[in-house]
Every structure is written in C-alpha cells, then in structure tokens.
Image 1 (tube, one colour):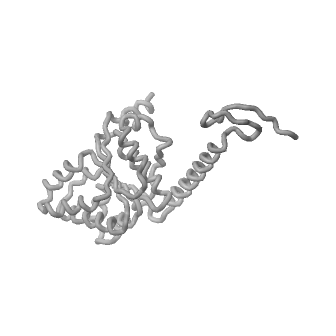
Image 2 (cartoon, helix red, strand yellow; image 1 turned 120 degrees about the vertical axis):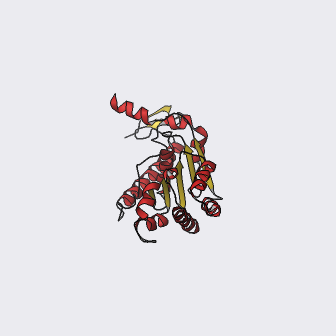
Image 3 (cartoon, helix red, strand yellow; image 1 turned 90 degrees about the horizontal axis):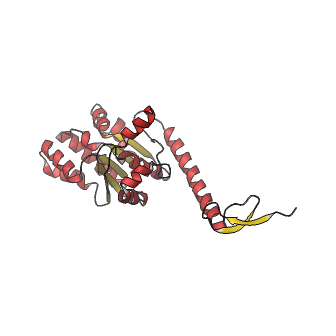
Length: 241
C-alpha cells in the first residue's frame, strides 16, 4: 500500500518537510531527539544506581532530580549569566555558588550534579552535618571518608559551619584529598568568597591554613553569583493556594 504523503512543518523546528504516516520531524530533528532520549536514559540509570548505593543513609548518594530542562524558569530569568555559565559547565571545574537565601543556588548545583551523574558517583551533603558527624568518628572513617572519595560532591551551606582550627584543618584535608584525586567539589553559601574567608579568619588564627584551604579549590573554580528574591515563599504560596 502506498503511503500518503503531504507537506507540512516539522513539529520541532517548523521547517517544511514531506510528512507521511509515522514521520512528523525532519531528519536533523530526529537525530537530535534520539540523542536527547539516549541521554535521558543514561541519566535515569545513573541516578537509580546511585540511589541504590550501599550506606546511602550516611552520605546522600544522589539527590533530587533537578535538571536544566525541568527547572523553574524564574531562576534562569533572575540570573541569566550564572545560568548560562552553569549550563556550559563540563564537569571539570569546582563551583562556588553564592547569593541570598532561596535564589536557586542549591537547585542550580543539583542540576550540575545530575549532569555529573552520567560520568561517575555524586553526593550531596550539608556542610554542618559533615563536620558534626565526622567529629564523632576516628579520622579516615565513616562519613568524612566517603565524602573524600565521592566523584562530584555538593557541600551545601558551608558558611553555616562555625569552624574551629581543628575543623579548618579537617576541611583542608578534605579539599586536599579531593584535589589530589581529581574530584570535583560544588559549594553553596550566602556570602562571597572574600566574606567567607574573613569569617574564617575571625575564628581561626592560622591565616596560612585558611589560605591553603581556599587555594585547594583553585585554579579551576567557577564562581556563580545568584541574585533576586527568594523563590521559597512562592513555592509555599502555591502549595497553600
């Protein structure tokens, strides 16, 4: 039976093509959609594998499935430059995301984690929990040890940790080991890199230790400045509506 053909726009790019039963896209768009589907399947398999990892209760291996495609467009509109730089991230540079509460720092870094999940292990951890729990274990064991090994680690709210000199030394060792193992670290904070350094210097007398800790994130550091109004109130209002 002869297939019925007609002219019409490609559903994706709107270019005029010959349409017949079973074909509604041009050849170029079909190739793009096939690549996107393959990437989606890889991402789903990676995140499922990570969620099933052993000892996931100690270190949250995997995280909320935040992606650039499914994101709240308000974040992109408020911070187009930071969004674009994050979108171009290749999974090799450390990331320092800072800004006010609720502007999308953690969400954006979780998008990066989901991208990194295609190539290796990922983990998300509250900085306060890392130092609170690791202090109860011998060095080289438990949560701290796994945080050193994870391929791409999101250390959330690092400015909330009231570091002592021992804590600063532990953070230096964490960054040093991850730096030496070609691991990637993502950091979120409410303050700028210089303000974070100033806070640490108020509590830690050893200036060289503070400098050495921050230098472990260099030279490959992507700094993302996030601005705007908090999105959390909007989410709460939607839920209460």
